[in-house]
Image (cartoon, rainbow, N blue to C red; front, side, top):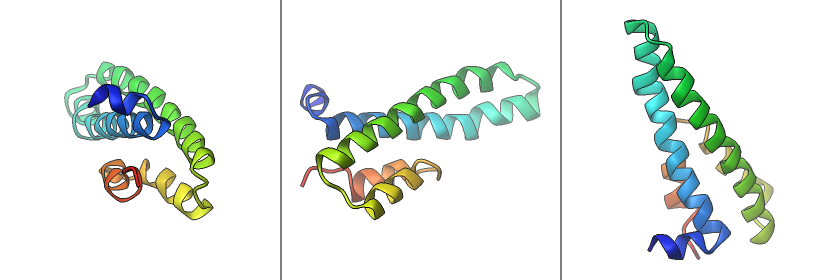
Length: 100
């Protein structure tokens, strides 16, 4: 199944969206509390960097898929906004990122 997803831009977007969503939840739910409650800022540096790279990849792939599939501005913008909300990319995967 993974090799099937990697072959298409939409599949790569789905993989990166999932990883970006997980990294966002780890950043908010684990790394930030470790920084502010336990005084361990290294967690935010590591997870924050990974999340930042995944976010940039998400945006690049989102633009690529939107162009390839002629998505409307509204669908593309809502997909982008989903990456800013916790659990948003999981919703976007179910709502917009599944093959038609």
